Image 1 (cartoon, rainbow, N blue to C red):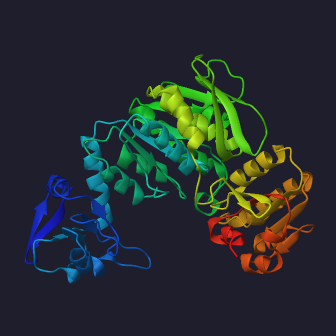
Image 2 (cartoon, one colour; image 1 turned 180 degrees about the vertical axis):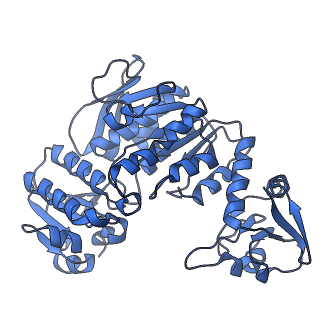
Image 3 (cartoon, rainbow, N blue to C red; image 1 turned 180 degrees about the horizontal axis):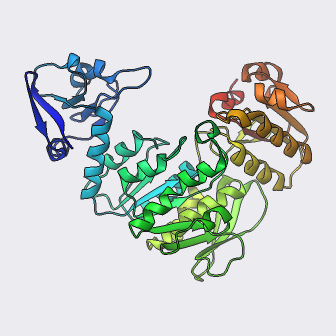
Length: 445
């Protein structure tokens, strides 16, 4: 790779990635927001549709950055703190690739349509009971977040977990080329981001790029043995470690559901060892699979079984991801962080399995479904019509068009003006919708 490093604006020198890497090794890390600078870090002046990081390079230096990487010489200031490159994003990605080549720890790549952030948090927490573990912060799982995650690892890192998201064709292949995982896991494959993918076949091809990468690198795949799509796309020659709750021959990690209460309660065993109990604060059968993924990965890397159980029992989800919240006399399952047809159907099935009275569902529109949007919302309405529910509230223009029978509102504000959750009494309430719907505001006075 040939970019440019500039010590003097009038003397632009060609350099190799090793030069930028040596600078990086003498800094505290990477910053991309001039308002939140890690002291002595390298600031990368990234650009987007509505912002130009080059404009804030001077602010980044003034706020504590040791260097500013820019790709517009208009914003160059003649001192040793400025590095001029052809493309800041490309340089960030190539720096991450080079840094990855120096890391000796296992790198676990995680992707999937649903549950990848929760699964990443569960695996990270499980491995952290034994290893110095670095993982993706939040859901910073795109072409910027993945390089930053790689560059946050160092020589003392013993486990690196990289979450990878995608809303367009081939994105997972591109992210795999950056983080080069030698272990990997796909949570689920289902309908989401259809505007970008076009159809389910493209989603499958994009997500399973992780499998193809691990096949080439002779890595190991952790896979849900209950998932027919995932199992059917496994490369024949790749090492696998399986988990699931259904009865399969030779499943490595098996979970047995103890009840259908709101909170997850199950037993697990790994390779015919002793049984262990988990009584979690999480909700939903689908989260048992996410927890089994963490058990499977943890035991594969020899994490103590009792330590795994202790972590899973104490884990509390946040950010409206399968949170169980008490609101007045009501128990609210707040799963309002995001929604797509696959995750919403799964959530409704799990809610239907709970054998409790006074069940209420509040759903918001699903976004990024393109031409399939109304059809997918009609499918959800059909599922709701087949369930035994005391009350259904639907919010959003798509549900209004798809729905004929249930209470419906255009916006969250309109719904909030008519429905106060505090006024409901002893209900079990499931709240779920796309991030842009902001359904969590229903829980605020």
